Image (cartoon, rainbow, N blue to C red; front, side, top):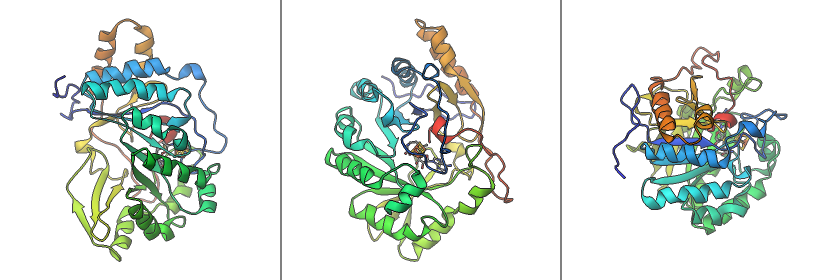
Length: 338
Ligand code: SAM
Ligand code: SF4
């Protein structure tokens, strides 16, 4: 298979990275992500596992080299291990460089070994606090020991773990150094995420109180560590720095800044088959309709992908700068996939 990228957007960016949300459901209700009483989509609206396979495989045939499975919580989707197993054929053929997932870790104890045997090598695991009571508060329904068991199982299975921590002022600012050191002790990298204004009933003014700029996080880290800027980028909103004292890599995801749009290499597929070309824009293209209208016509699906990519905007509009939330998104992260 040729390595030449085939999906090129109007701003000459090659699309090589697909994030696919396989469910809108979750066993947690993180306060910044979901309301407590969510209405989930009817099953018929979701892409079936076969449809997900067809669509992801078509993306891969058109130059996508990295597939990240997300949600909702991807590991609560029934039969999801069959999907991972099916996608592993693209790793074996060399068409895909990396198959990975973002998870809350609650089901990892069950699935870590199967993930590893499907060719998954790395997992992003979301964890905002090391305190059981705070964990319950932020996830509403989660239990920290279950996640810790998942981390143990994943490490035993040989999976590398990167922890994603949403930086929340007044919530986990006091755990900054504990988290860095806990991750270093366990050989895990750590990425901080700035909280984004997502979801109609939980976003807005209330969120601003919790907004903790990663510039501030960095300043605090520099009071204790020497941080060296790393040049590497994944084409996304993360920038990396090395902690000289521990050797570990820290990531800083600032989705509200525009500094990464120029190199954006990714698109996001929702669990209902909508392709969002930009995390911060409402624009999308309905690939489920194309799939269902053309059950035997792969050329039509390929043509639709190329068309959808021509609609990718230059960048997004998030802006906290005037202390009001403009560019606010009404869809939830759990729908688009973080
Ligand atoms: N359930 C999985 C998990 O929690 O890792 C995967 C889906 S979750 C939507 C993906 C990531 O989005 C998580 O790291 C979560 O912390 C992050 N996230 C959710 N809502 C967010 C928000 N409003 N701002 C910033 N990050 C958010
Ligand atoms: Fe679930 Fe992940 Fe959203 Fe938390 S952030 S509610 S774990 S989808």
